[in-house]
Amino acid sequence: MRIRWESATRYYEVFLQQDLFGDWVLSTSRGGLRNRLGALRHLALPSKDAAVGELVTLHKQRLKRGYQLVSMWEVPDKAASLIKTVGRS
Image (cartoon, rainbow, N blue to C red; front, side, top):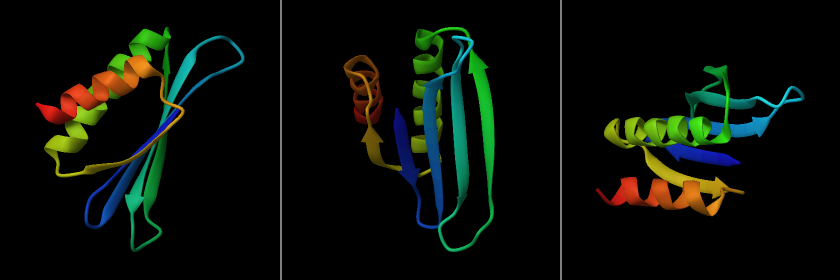
């Protein structure tokens, strides 16, 4: 699953995947749209539900900081509905 937010000058992207040990890994990539500066971070989570909860928290933070949701790829219905609900409130 991939989700991307953008502001006027920056982007923030999240990838959720399962590793070989069965843990869910939430990878975040962030940086500037007009330069090569950025960072990548990986966070191991015990379950998919915990990862979706972290994803919703990140979505709230991005909206609060002025980012717009740009795209969502391969997002399960449960996670997509949570994200869309947060975006409306």
